[in-house]
Figure 1 (cartoon, rainbow, N blue to C red):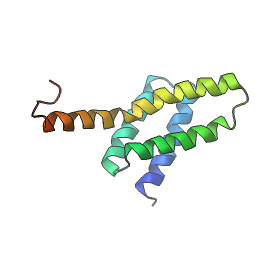
Figure 2: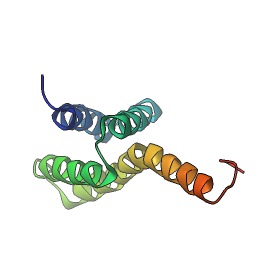
Figure 3: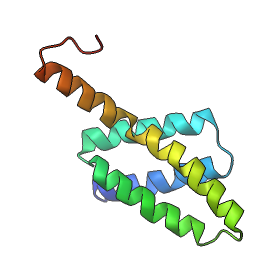
Figure 4: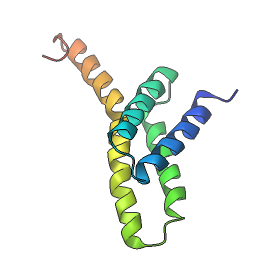
Length: 105
């Protein structure tokens, strides 16, 4: 069995491709799930961004038009932000805890 990062790359590529091919909210939910899984598996946000960049570049190389590339980059941003959401929530919770605030208040 591969490392958590190798498994993450495979799942991320498949989910991003599904989203770029027209996937909707369900695919964005997959992105959030991927982010939660990355967080628990120790795949950090910088690694997620690196994976996103590498996967998106590979997918863009197959794109035939500049307009198609631009659309993929815009949709890819939505996907990446959904994937990074759990990291944002964890960071905010940590900062609230360190500041002595109740998380979410």
